[in-house]
Image (spheres, rainbow, N blue to C red):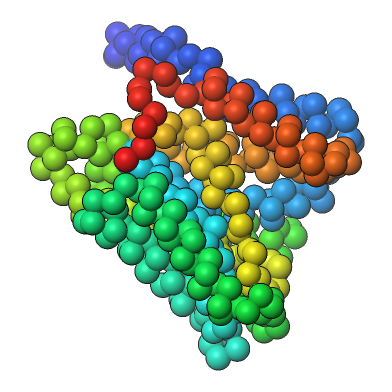
Length: 326
């Protein structure tokens, strides 16, 4: 028994030795960033600011749960912001008739968009970059038509209480939904055949086919899952801002992709996971929060955020793999 324990201990030591600075960089960067912002402003570590960060990170992290699966396969999805906006508009339009149950239509809207993306990409064999860029543009046009450029207000009190209220110890309901979604995403990715197949495709599509994985079917399902996550993100964001607007989610896809990649899931796919995306999402959100508290100009914030994200990706990516996306 002692010999087995010694072997196990040596196994953990070997794993720790094999871990490089790149593997630990996201959490190190997050800790250092929090320390710096905490020193710059004492209010940074307040409970009120903690809840603000939780509310702000919800949309990014929920969307990241979908994007992680897509990037894990070695593909890309640029339609995040437009799918989010479309689902938010569907939510705002259906709340007056269906109240709380409008969430069903938001999820279905996102899943449908993901299905279309998946079919065009996997079955139509259109590169994911082009397929989802087309969706980004087309869906934004649909959103503009539905809204006519005017915000669609959400006034249903029960809906807002459920999706934007506060419950345990003042923690926002949206944060609770976010935690549940993260747990489900982790279980699907790490404990189900679907998650393992998605990772296998990113590791080598040809090898995955030889192993008996239905690559086309899995890719379509991956995009449906991603669309579903973007739909939920749109639902939660519309509840947060009490409306759906034509510009909602514009440029948001860049933050989502950055969160996933900074968290350690390379664009080449095959490695990474949910834990890294959580770190990446909080890095991006805390960076924005800290700079706001410091009173930095929005223009300067964009420069700082861009430089920091490039640095983070530069350090965290695995250069032993190609970074092309399919």
